[in-house]
Image (cartoon, rainbow, N blue to C red):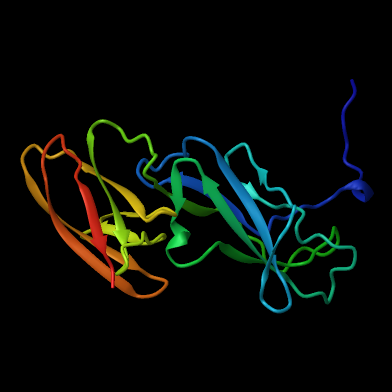
Length: 220
């Protein structure tokens, strides 16, 4: 009978400095459609430079970069700063409300020296439904746009109802917010907040069963 044994001198250790588990904010499950991730490196002056490093997606759907911190002589070397940016066909990543990507440090390591820090569990990457999302029929979808004083659409604005249901505007300032289908006309208040600048706005609308109104929210 034959078998395999691991040769200690030939083992290679891999640690990912980040793990992201994408989840649909509406269903709590894995997202539908396509999803792509890009990795940027921070330069000495603080600017971000795109890299050609590809993410490894595990069988469980976790986005990782297992060889990112591996170096020949890691002892005494500082960590490097990176960020992940994600684009998904039917979603807007929730981090867009206040930043352009998810930042993290990649600590140096090799087979003899593990990294100073590495996550034990993946971080939840919340994906909010975009206007193109295939909403289930048992929801009423409130559609509209957030605009500034000039009437231009504003991206990355959080639109919410009573801090319970929320979404983000897309690059054009458009949003789609799903609520349980009402059985009778109902009045709801939508709040809009651009967390990057502090501008806010809101509007109260009447929701009629079977009708998704075209709503405009101005922020100042």
